[in-house]
Image 1: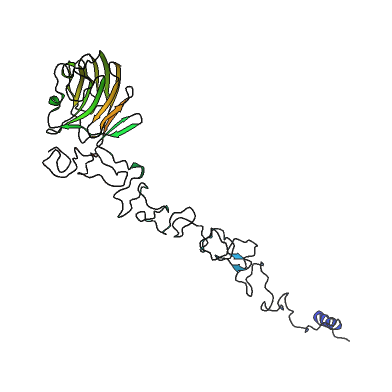
Image 2: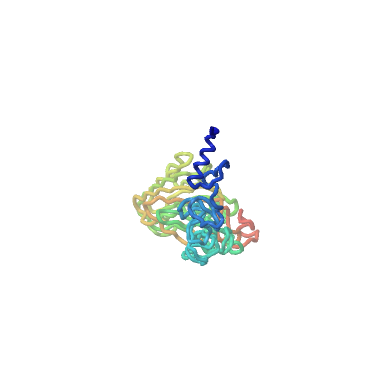
Length: 375
């Protein structure tokens, strides 16, 4: 009898007959276990596995990320890496449209590009090249150290103590100054003013400062006295409104009668003058100096007056329109001048905050050394 053979033995015998040389009774290899190692095999760029000489392999074909064709992205490779580089022109020319650091040209990078007068590579606005890459100049709003005392840009107006405006006219003015009271200067007699500024058929407006007391007044006068001048002022009628008067202002002189010139409210006054062969007018007194106020004068010349002017002894007579509102404004805080210099006492210019300025800082004359008071 033949002994019973196992299934495994029969299978082995069958394998031998088929020419299979695997050892019977040993475990077979799993698929892939007998593949050779990766070393020596060609690398496949794009399979997502860094192999052999590949610096990277992110498994995509993008040309703007950190791995491009299995090479690490870098500035200068001619490809713009998204989120990291503003540009990349692949050259080492630093003065073209893309810097060697792969940044676009910009003010402050230290390289003067077309359209930039200068570029010193810093954000200092006090040197010769400002942070916006323009050469420092008066009026740019930056104070050039050692060159400018101030620079307020478009506000470099050199604010005066008093400014006269009417329509397009805008001019600094100074008060008429005498060492007598306004009453003595007005010299009312023969139903007329005798300031010395009266003229036939003309109306004058001016500020007056008493050097002794410092009192500042606003004077309005019209026509001329026949008795003192020999000139025959025709029948005349003038009306004026004075608006936005500062508090405390009083009518010091009403000329003929107080119904001709009077305050009709705390902040306004009215003049209603009818005259011939003489002058007429009035005086408001007590204006703050230095002060911050603005007064409107609305003129109506019905007859007898054919010229209107402001009296400023430093620059003569300033012609005014007969029909437009005149504004007198006082400032008490100085500003940078158009030439980027600061106002100063003794320079002969009456700046905001000054009571007087006679061109020196010597006391005992018509203006105190501080420019804040009379002698």
